[in-house]
Length: 213
Image 1 (cartoon, rainbow, N blue to C red):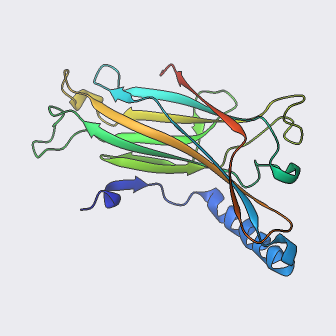
Image 2: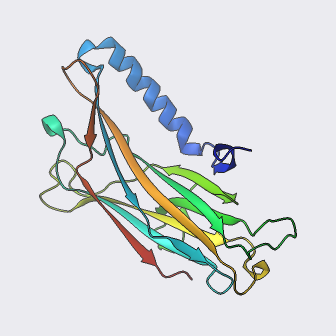
Image 3: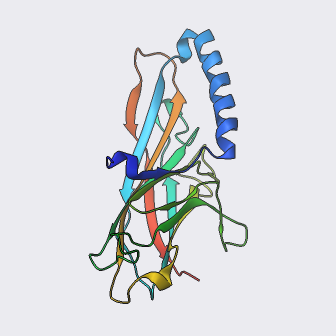
């Protein structure tokens, strides 16, 4: 089994169908207007802190906040069609075997937006993984995104929740380490030019560890 095949990906969430419809409509509009063929492609990434899960600390939660600090080229809104993707690699300690065949407890990972109460996440993206995971969710930006340097901050918040599926099965002196990175990208149609442009998103990314209940 290759390392790539061991990465658990979430199935396409319900919002993906809607995004596909919107993308198809946008593509039709783009092909009908030769001035709308190219796009600005905004990207930015940030590494999260290494997460160590144990029998006594079986869960960790993180708030990921993306804040826009400027408009893109030609006063473009870099938040359009934005998507956030988190990639995690799972590494159990040598004594984390609980199945007798070299296995260890799986990690449940979820990634999405906070509920109105802030007690959980609204996400169709949740998986149980042994070696790694890949989850995506569209950030919901709010604030003054047309003038990000004035008024309410233009920002979006997402929450990553990591937890052991069976913490009681993990030996007391064993642990599972998770290294993860969050990547943001968005695409905005541009007028003129003869090629797409890859641009560093004019955003700041803040990652804050939350208290796990």
